[in-house]
Image (cartoon, rainbow, N blue to C red):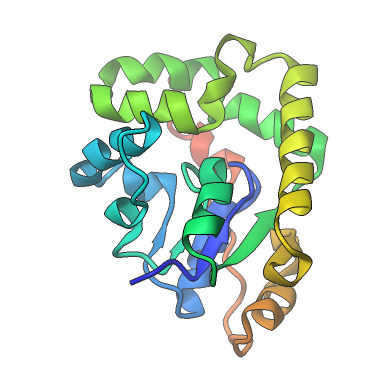
Length: 204
């Protein structure tokens, strides 16, 4: 199996909702960081890719039709080259809302503290190929927003327009289905993994 859809949008831009939407549309299974975290059999292959010992993306994506969120967005250029027929979706979000969401969730101090309980291989992947790359500068608003905007601009610059959908999940089914040439489902568009869902797990 080869990837048919590559998500190039950074985390906290609606990637979980996009995962669910893609799977509804037939692009299943769809990888996402939440899936990777529960698939330890793939962690050694990911570390080989991250550390440059492998360039075989099939070793981690061979069972998937789509991949969104991290690590896919971090390696969108390599994936777009490896899977030349795959379409690319850049999920966007209003910058201030996006930054605030990262600070409450993936870049929060409580998440970084929780790493002490994680397997070492998953921490290594997280440090190298997610928003956690921001490290000690993760709360630096100007730095993080500049990174966000530069990444989005680079996706637009490097991926041919015919192959790229620039997409806000609030737009719902229509632009996504038109881009992928599939019928619009009758069911509501999924809305998942909002900030409130994350905050249920934050220590008090």
